[in-house]
Amino acid sequence: MKLLINLAILFLCCIGVSGQTYRKEICVGFRVSSSEIDLDYGDNASNLAEIVGLLSDVQRNPNMEITGVSFCGSASPEGRSLQNKQLVADRCASLEHYIRQRVDLPDSVVFKCDKTDVWQKLAIYVERSDMPHKDDVLYQIRQTPEYTYNAKGTLVDSRKKRLMDMNFGRTWNYMLREFFPSIRNASILMVYIKQKQKETKQTEIPQEVKTPIQSVDTIPQEISPEETQPMPAAKSSRYFALKTNMLYDALAIPNIGVEVSLGRRWSLAADWMYAWWSNNNKHRYWRVYGGGLSARKWFGHASEQKPLQGHHIGINAQILTYDFEFGGKGYMAGEPEGSLWNRLNYAFGAEYGYSMPIAKRLNIDFSLVAGYMGGRYYEYIPIDGHYVWQATNNRHWWGPTKIEVTLVWLLGNNNYNVKKGGNK
Image (spheres, rainbow, N blue to C red):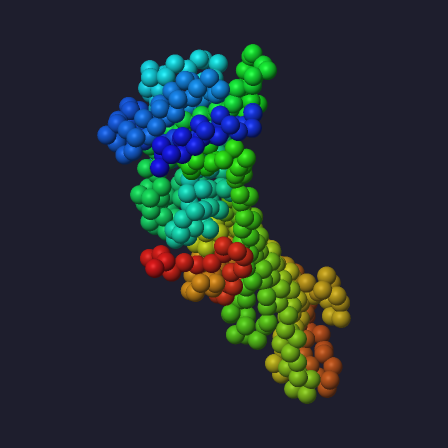
């Protein structure tokens, strides 16, 4: 079949439209951590014979010419960056030496790839597969920086680490087994051929050959001259959630919250509560409303798998007003008959929590905020339909200011929990 394809190429170049360019990609395998050409490894013997034969046939044909040959290499991402860089250079050199020993190629048509985007190649393998957690893997490859440093220049995070920690290492091992051999062991030889122009004596190298190829964005395959396969745009993955504090719900205080992932394991959460229950005949009041904001930093193994889960710490600020009275002395926050801003109490503090999955789209978040609560409140006694003022107090409280057992509804394209053990 390969022989027929090559013969067809030669025939089309002889009779086809002048100036046509043909691109052929040949994969040559290398063993792990090796840069030596091994004819016994994989399909190396047949692939190398194919490209040497094609180049030789083109050179013997008076109506055809080689306009460019580009040597590119790659190494899989499990190795160290500097070692991989040297390994790629050595593999390119080995392949070039092997080919140029057998085919006389002028320097003017030989180009070398200075850089191959191995992550882009890995993303294509993942996208074309049906592997578990496919969307999460693509999100990490395309959205997470390869390396993250703090203000002091210390490495604190990386794309590779997140992928290695995903699904307790099972995802990384899957890619190591299924994809890395093709990435790690592949060097690409790209051949550009066009029909000679009879009216010109000097060959002009096409623009795409004049500029050395910087990366390989397709899995090795034969493609037509007109084909262009741009890298698919990364899908935007939004991570956010709706929430309700079940402790407040149990106390007949309806509440709702929202939380949005900001990236780099930060999130912003906001909530609001409102209860205005009363019974004037018995002077019973259960009134409270207000809300809060939290800025959170997520950490730990679970948070590396997916945003909005695992351990989190942060800062919290709240404002609220209330009126509690059950047939005896009542307590009212702030100025009577005033607005929220006249009557509010306030609190701020540090928080710690942990969010754990309980269903595909549901988490439970246990959180505790401790800090300071302040503001003015009034004591009163209801007498004959009137509320008799007793005392005015200023609150100064240090200690727990908020407790949450929150039901979290996960929303977004990739914001869901995977069953333990992975997909079946």
